[in-house]
Length: 254
Image 1: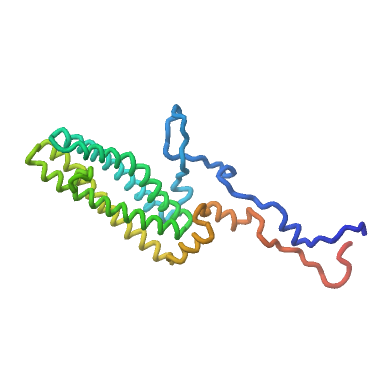
Image 2 (image 1 turned 180 degrees about the vertical axis):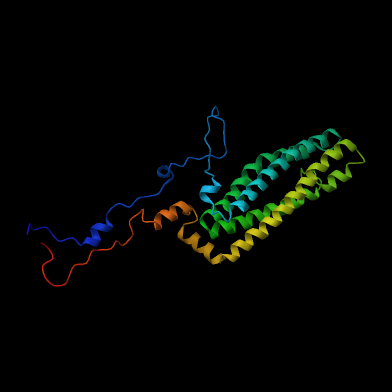
């Protein structure tokens, strides 16, 4: 022979580069939030319900997204109502807090509980389900407090609106709008928690699975449905490729 050492076929086949599925290769570009072209900022997230969410869960995930939009609108209406509250003789601190809630909770609620819900249904991620339950549960409690309307919380809830009728009827009527919207938000949040929990438990989800994802690090970037499909549809090399077998007797080469 030529003196070269024989290299097992399994070894050099395993050394072949495997395709890596990335956002750049799939051609997906971030599309949320949709920003005008004249703004020198780019979207931070990729969001496509029909492409990434299983068809049986698309309606629910879209409803969670609309719930986020409704809660943001509620915070905007609450800001206007707190302004009317201030003009009618109330404290200006409520208006300042309402502005903080609008600027803080609008983006944070998207990142902290909608995105975990989106990623949980996209990749059946137990860790993201757990993150959603924890953060969304805290959001539900806060929304209930805002609906009640304790003084000094920067929220025009029921107590604040009803108690202000003796001072300014016009301002109190405006303050009733966010009280109703906060109540509707809290009710819809309770329904969403129960529905998501039912789906999660029905699919065999558990805290142990979430802990496993944390220990292995898969919670950082769980595979999407498309990536999982490509891994099992023959578009990538298997980890241990099949080696052709030769007959035991006779010459192996012509």
